[in-house]
Each structure stands twice: as structure tokens, then as C-alpha cells.
Length: 104
Image (cartoon, rainbow, N blue to C red; front, side, top):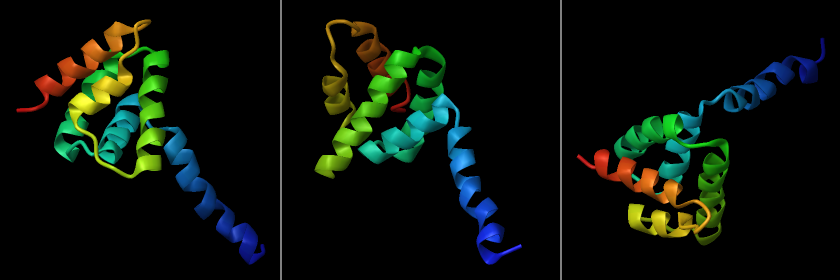
């Protein structure tokens, strides 16, 4: 076994673990990256992970890419504004419902 072969499991493990993350875990991570407090992001991730469709989850994921380009924190309201889409008003409603419910 070469040193390269021995390192393969160490390199592959984080990739496999990230692929196994639940929707709630991915939402929590993304919201934290957008600037939501870790406690509120965890609460919202748990709620939204159960309520959002796959398409809505993908839309939320897109915001992380927007934030990474600008390197700025976003408020719950700013995130909701970015999520606003006439084709899917339910996404913003669920997001704001979770944000308000997890604020306390």
C-alpha cells in the first residue's frame, strides 16, 4: 500500500459525509453562512427541512452562492426578499414562518 492509497479514505470520508447530510443540516449550514445566528439557523433548518419541497430547497441553496460572491451577512428579511418568486409564494411564507417561530 502506497502513501497515496493510504490517504484516499481520509480524503473521501468528508466528501461522503457531506453527501449524507440531511436537508435540515444543509439548510442550517447555509443559513449560518448567510449570517443567521447558529441557534436560529438550527431551529429554522429543522422546520424547513420537513416542510420544503426539493425545488424550494434548491432555491434556498442558490442564496448561499449569492452571499459568497458578496461576502456579506444577510438578515432574515433580506433572505426572504431574495427568495421572493411569484411562481412560489409558499417558499417565502414558510421561510418567514420558520424565522419568526425560531426568533425566540
